[in-house]
Image (cartoon, each protein chain N blue to C red):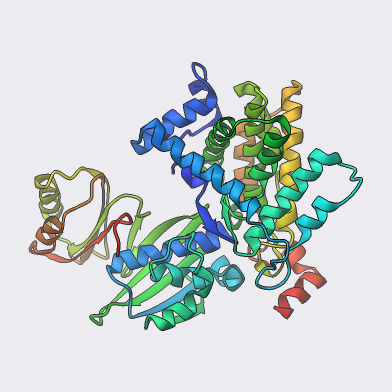
Length: 222
Length: 282
């Protein structure tokens, strides 16, 4: 957390956690998908569910999915703008198990037809955190260039991915490993100090045993 | 690395001004130059000034609950508070209402508490003819203390109640005011700690779940409390409990608050007959 997570951001009100943080959740989701989704199913949990409508949380997440930043004056009009952009939006409330009070669960449809799910929470002051992607735990905040690799859980995968990063001169800032079961589907969340080239991402995606490689860099356009 | 305790900030401030220690830490933390960090903080200060200029007394929040009150307060004659505190009160209302009306504000540390910092700094700058440079230093002081509060306790109403939002802002503002008046780091810590002590336990009970009733006026309380705490600290009053321990107590109190009193719009003022009626109407 930097001092500018405390002082700032400059944002459209009324709530840093429920409005600005919600815009950032939408933006994170858009960056993870790489494009604007064709459809977004948004479930609001806890305080997001109880007070989301009054805080514009629903409109804020949609604004983020449309690529708006938290200080964008069109945030209140995002439903209309989504309709014009051909993005189907479905918003509802529900209970998520053991989730932070300000959590949203998004099911996003890629233009190719495949879907991605994302659980993310707004921690206060506009800061957000991803909790899970496609049902697998993955904790990161999107502040650094982040690589999310889905792979078969077998010996050597981590070595091969980190070797590729090393060959491209990327320094790993933090790394997490999760899996659904031994020998099942695993996920690596790798935060790096440098932006990662397309070539490197392709090399990793082409590794034997890697099912999908998703890259997030909030400083680039998506 | 962010400061993990107020004591760590005080240690870092042994050989240089406290605001400078926070600035240096930011440069190390984010790998940026002093100019970059200062430019960013200047942008925030300019945005705070702009939020009061952009305030429109005719604007109403989406649900119609808020707006126009700041202008009424500013125009009031013969207040008990006197002209300076009257301006502090109306500035806090102004930014709070601007935020509720989906205007552009600076979260400090959150949008719900965005009125506190500008309410204490803008009238003081005007009255004492203080430089923008000094005001930006004050924002570094506030951010340094805010960082400790965020890491040891919380700045989210949904996690810690209103004490985490307006309370944090008030503690940050109190420390900043001590710097504006040339006080010592120990006085900044005492001011922050006393401001937080006064707001410990404050619940987050927004009517209809909106950042309007009672949030806007609680910014006034946060600002006036910050001024009192800064004056008490600079008069040499003993805070009794060290600032770090107050922050830890705040974390413990936040954890023990029931969910109904943490931004769910289900308890406190939100649960009053009138509060419920407003919620139903919306």
